[in-house]
Image (cartoon, rainbow, N blue to C red; front, side, top):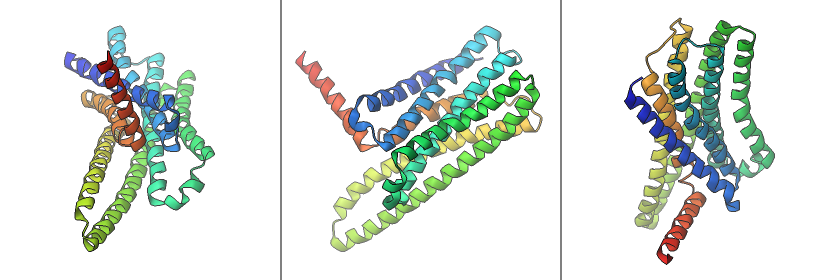
Length: 287
């Protein structure tokens, strides 16, 4: 494998682990940040941290140890563990977007729907579905049904990837439609009251957040589009597909930029980051 690929892969992996690790540390260490929404954010950050830790390093050490020979039973298990953590990132992202969907589209039902028990159920489901998927594949491998495990993983993997993409597109499109209608109403009201300067300032802030969410969605759909292509090629009898050089970095990038849109744009996390930054500056100035 080319040197540039491993250098880029390790850089993206370390960056992904640092960013998501910071989000996990920040939310878990600050009591005021332990909210329902931040529960989903931490769960997503843990999954994305796992992607950064496994996606490139496991393949790198595999390349050093075995030169990526035809997969044995143990190597298939490691591969399915990587699939588990990637799918977990996707299901946690959909769970987070679903929580935001309820808050934006159904705000009056949010408090009654999003109880503590419901939050725990959604987080456990986000981890449980990929876990059952991986456990089934590993069980088939233990029974020496390797060919059946490959076929089953391709069929079920393609189904999961399509479902996640369709759900995410629907939820985000619904939220963007609500935000667009609210902005249109605010602009009309502002014209009547002649307060255009206030609306312009708020519009700039909202637009930046929406652009980041749109970017995250595009990267996610690109990543899962490549995964769907790989699953489809496996179903049609192709043993290998030449997308390794851009599929793996895209997976890590997807996990690395998730906290930017879903964590650092939240007001409470922003304020806590600024508080930590100002505290650090005061310590440097007093020394």
